[in-house]
Image 1 (cartoon, rainbow, N blue to C red):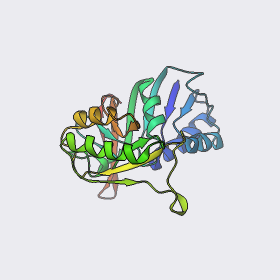
Image 2: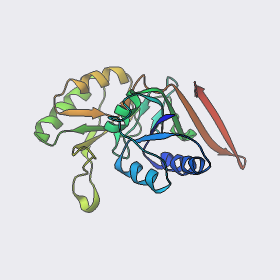
Image 3: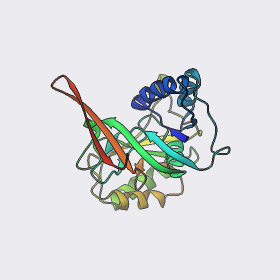
Length: 215
């Protein structure tokens, strides 16, 4: 299997479990969605490739910061949204694994990451704020900080503006508005990509799992 491997706390657990299966003989080649995932996968012995080696993938398994009933996602809390979306788009299927608390009625409580080119940041920030307003949303835009308070830099060398919107009534409209801003490289709305989801929660001392779509 040609497998896209996601980024984040839940994906980290998946990497450990996948590594154990590989050591037991499972045949899989992974394409990591971040340098952090690449390092973790190499450590547990998962064979890896790039999208140049494997431009078409069978499946991507990744986490999510939010997921609604239509399997629309907010992702990018870990800052890997660009590579995550490229890998997901190259896959026949994308399955989300997440805590059931990530399931929401309306997207937006989790800050929406907007990855931007560092050039012209001030102008891009104004344009992003205007795009958000045009899509019927309001909220603060905050430049994500990294270690020591310096700006967080993605694996692709970009910056992230986190949009604290509280609610996104029309994700498709907001997506289109953000894409119209030249300085925007990617945003954290994953629409029409997830084909299934596995949501888990601890209840009454036991694990309960809910599956959505095709998993």
